[in-house]
Length: 295
Image 1: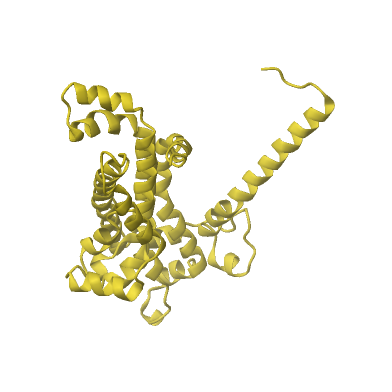
Image 2: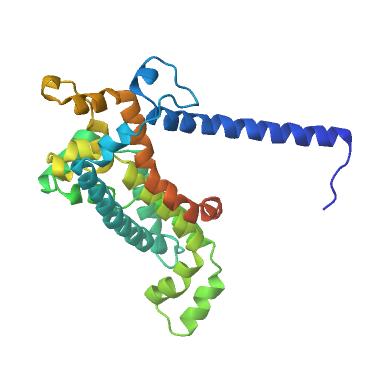
């Protein structure tokens, strides 16, 4: 590749690199600030003296969260939700995207189904009908209330459907000539070829289930069954009955504020996604682009 050696080209290159570095620093600043606040003393944080360097480092906020049995119970509920809901989402997404990716000659009712699913993506019945349907089905206060209402993510279906459309028809025709049926063609050809798009959808599904807290607030009444994000939203410090605390407990309590505790919440809830994301990130842009340009 021939690169321009002119002074103007070099200045433009330096300007672009500088802008990208600035954008990177601006993107990282809130995360760094959150980390610093979570390990600083509550007095310094409440006084507004903490920015990008910690003051009076302590990990009391993390100790308060991690030593809480309810935290780990909520954590396991979220893990169960991600595993169960993610598996259900992927299974139904694949089974729905495959027939919708076929032509009208192969699936005559395709356009009717497409209009139906697009309509549901653009319009909803509202929160009250949503709650009434889930309640009438007897799902309230169960893990299924967190999983079944979003079992078929329409955006993911459309993304995977468009990816399936881009697979050469010759592969399907060759498999059909060898005696393979639609299900075998899906399992042996379409799924292995679609790994970038499937990885992208998997990331969307995991992040969606892990970060969702609203349905846990509305649909779960038992505190032992709420997911992690709902638990963290409801977790607050109270200063009631402080006269019953020991001197050591009081000193520990004074190291923690709602600001430092909330910062610790954010970081703890980010860790699982940060561990998963590097393995799927290289598929993300590739899968979105390939799954969004077909008609």
